[in-house]
Length: 404
Ligand SMILES: *Cc1c(COP(=O)(O)O)cnc(C)c1O
Image (cartoon, rainbow, N blue to C red):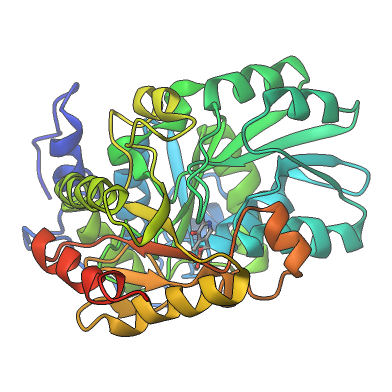
């Protein structure tokens, strides 16, 4: 216990290592991990008040846990929202949001380039319960506007997109949502609050997959929703308690500690990614590079304004190849020639990950859908980590330098 509450107006870097619950009576300096499913009540009357919600206090692990609370407070401080609530995974957070906000007859608008499982969850699973979804262009605000109906309850955006790094204008979408009496939610997985704070740009809710950069070292699954206390406490809290997409205390603890290094990891990984992107643009085996930090990116100016002047840590590129079969063979050659990079589909790790979206994350789309989304067979995605930049370039050059 401490009688020294944190002063107001601390910088974000300080909040990242300091905000959480107060330490216990033992004065531990590193946050405690409370591995317990239940909490002992001092007496029956207190138990009754806590279960009725008229008194604060922990009751049962599906509802809340002190380690999870520490994570929620720290993430909310970084996003600049009143509150946050943890979830078992990023998809668990999106499920929680949809269960809390939507009912049969409601209408949702989201971009066609959203994370694949998000499209399936909202479009297909919630479609079964009578929620209607319109998928629109990532970058054309006019398409979002034209899709608005009297029943529109939620606009849901993600920026930059995976794998092509298209950037949407959060402030413009917030204005549109509010003009229609709807909410704007933004999936901030790719930028994290270290680069982009959607709530400051008008978004009502911010969604996280803690599995990615927040943990940052590929260890655990986690998710969260950040937003106003009214929605977090009154709408999403009861959903978690009832439906059980609860963040485990162990995973919360890992991600809580990950947040302490988020700022410096993101700066270092963005610097590596920018160097990789610039270097790729000069390689004869590369046809096109997709990275918001490059002047050649179609939404470069918007991205620089919206993302604290950083492009993020994901770079995608097309290798040369005149037809899909040649392009795929060339992409596979580059991927198979690596000896350091991880061939995987995850991202947000200190280890650089190389992916062929056309046959993995986007492999279940039809060729027409893939072409509509701009994902060709020559496309490679690199989620840049913390290895030395020269080692990353050399690993990519092994294949790029020997394309025939
Ligand atoms: C990975 C990811 C998710 C889902 O997160 P999980 O923790 O894997 O459930 C949601 N949105 C984006 C943008 C992602 O990259």
